[in-house]
Length: 260
Image 1 (cartoon, rainbow, N blue to C red):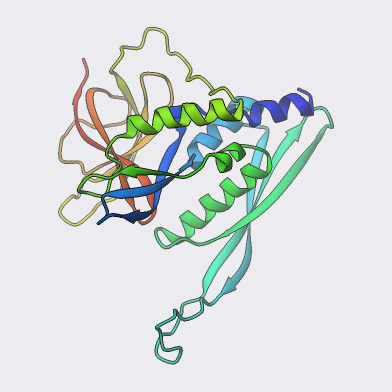
Image 2: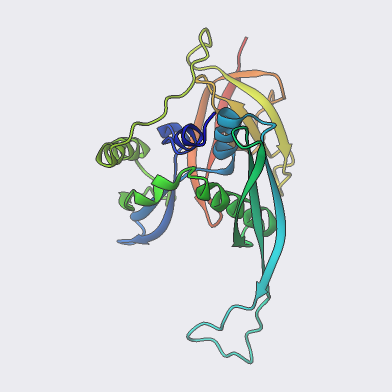
């Protein structure tokens, strides 16, 4: 693959199903939120696997610097000690067959408030991917005010799907299509794996890796209140809702039944 073709494929817009939306601010008694589009690390990893292959890209993380946040406008500097915030650089390398060498691009990010180290690593990885062109076009999609429900979640996600298609058209881009799994039933999800995250009152809570009917990877959170979730099983009738937290948007699996 030539460098020009590699760039074209890395820069290809993501399918709407891979694009997520983060609420950055609210107004009108929290009934409206300003949202911005982004893709998570898993979507970027899938893009790299699809374009260059899983054995032709790699990452490395390097400690960068620490800084102490300045006191807020109404904080007393002597009474408000601040904890130093760490940061890291991510080097994302791709093997270029045309040049027979690895090429690395590096960017960094501070640790985040939620899951600090994991969040900082993920952010630095996404920033490094942007240097390769992955998802860079998303910065050209304007933030949009949308309605929020009583839980401060996006009330009508379908409107953002239409908005995304409209903005791609304005940019002269065409969305990537999700792969087709052929004979997969329309509402069947495959459970690829679980990562337990026990919570008070919910000892079976877990992050669940699903494969959607369209063949895409989807990570959802389950409180584990229903039995039957296990690696290798299939579920149907899934009720998956979008949630927002201080750490960003995520999906929650609220209901399902095991498939025959």
